[in-house]
Amino acid sequence: MLTTPPEILRAGRTLLAEMRYETPVVERGYANQTLYVNLSENTIAATPVKRQLAVFETLDTILAAPVAFPGKDEARRFFLTLTQAFKDWHQAAWDSDAFTAGQARIATLLAEAADHA
Image 1 (cartoon, helix red, strand yellow):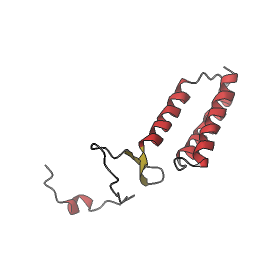
Image 2: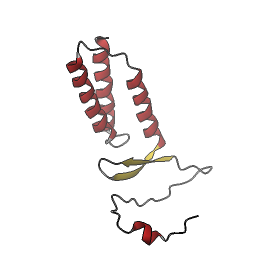
Image 3: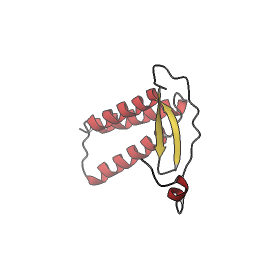
């Protein structure tokens, strides 16, 4: 049980982000949302579960992709490009053209890397 008052716990700390959450329609105890916290940009958002599932499925595809490179420089270039493509895509709004385009960009990068495997 918390015995220290919240004001004392907050003293000397900096608030990095805050989010006002409006409770959506809850069905059978579930709001069909997940909490998204971006520590790089200090943002917090509620996202649809379908979006998070798409992200996790894409991550699974990336991790299972058969890729091979002739050397370290090519591998480094590929993974830096893939990382940036993933970050750009992950910031796009769900069901937007940018989200669809970002997912296609990642699939293209993986297909090109698989051609060398």
